[in-house]
Image 1 (cartoon, rainbow over the protein chains, first blue to last red):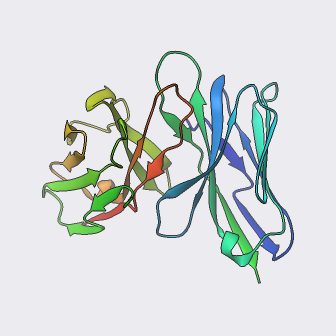
Image 2 (cartoon, rainbow over the protein chains, first blue to last red; image 1 turned 90 degrees about the horizontal axis):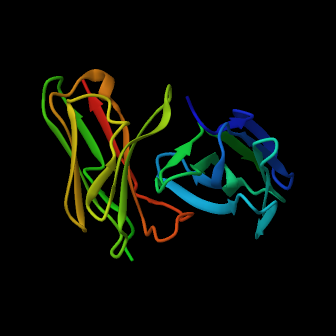
Length: 113
Length: 115
């Protein structure tokens, strides 16, 4: 089963609005990452938050992590049409030296001009 | 830097044929990952290598799938024989793993269609 599960599956907003996507996971993690995928392209890394961090910012992106609830959220402020893409969370599980990531199925964000 | 390079970008083949997908990771990266993406199953990790050695191949669906990394700059994923259910987009990603928590860089993917 998927470690990370994004919510909602799809989100449609108007340009200028904020977009919030959520991710839940099941096991202990070292870190959680968010990636973006434009249609027909590979995934692009956006931001990484470690298990001992609670919030991180990068430009218009804000990520929070609540390890007690095993959840994370990605906020995109002042959205633009170019933000239209699928967004995935990925977790690196703690324990051992296995550095693989487990991806959720993603949230499809549509920003209407 | 050219990024992760994958070839071919598109492959259409008939059931039963052998398919070979190729990947050139970013120079200096020590880890390489092969993923498969479908609408139904999302993004699945098939296998990953660290310093050219396969570390985890638990995601390889069956014996029809095999992967090699003969050197630090090249990897192949082979499907023999191919089946229609193998149709998917296959991604290669690389990273430089030192202490963990490192982002992965994805290639553009190979869209495989098996008829």
